[in-house]
Length: 168
Ligand SMILES: [Cu+2]
Image (tube, rainbow, N blue to C red):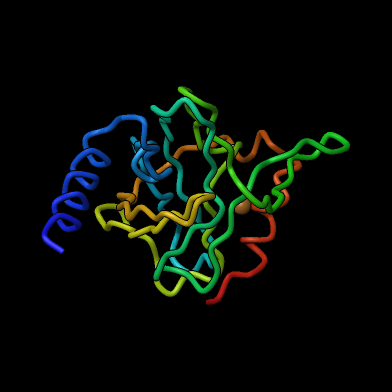
C-alpha cells in the first residue's frame, strides 16, 4: 500500500514537472488589450475586442463567450458582400500555433446582443471565454469610446440595425 502511494506521488511529481504534458488552451492563450465599446444610451448591442496570443505549438480556438452584460453573446466577424460590410456569426475564432489573433472594430469581435444596461466608459465588462478543449478564461474588458468613421461606411448593416432598435 505504502509503495503504491509512493509510486503514485512520484508519478504525479513527474507529470507536473514535465513540459511534455500539454497545457490547456486557456493556459496557452494570453488575452491582451481587451476592451468593450461604449455605446450611446439605449443602444441594444455592443462588442468587445482583444488580442489572443498563443504560446503553444498547437493551434487553439475560442468557441464561445459569455457575459452577464447581455442576453446573448456571440462570436462575430465582418465580411464584405456586394460592397456592404456585414456582421456574421462564426462558430469559433482560431488562434494559430505560436501566433496571435486580433479582434478589432470592423473585424472579429465578441458581440453583445440585448444589453442589460448601457455600457459607460469606466465600467468593466466581465467576459468568460471557452476554448476548444473546454477550458475557460475569465477576462475583464474596460469600456472605451471607439471612434469609427461610420458615415464613411454606408453598408455598415449591423450599425444600422442597432439604430433601428433604439429603445427610448
Ligand atoms: Cu457583431
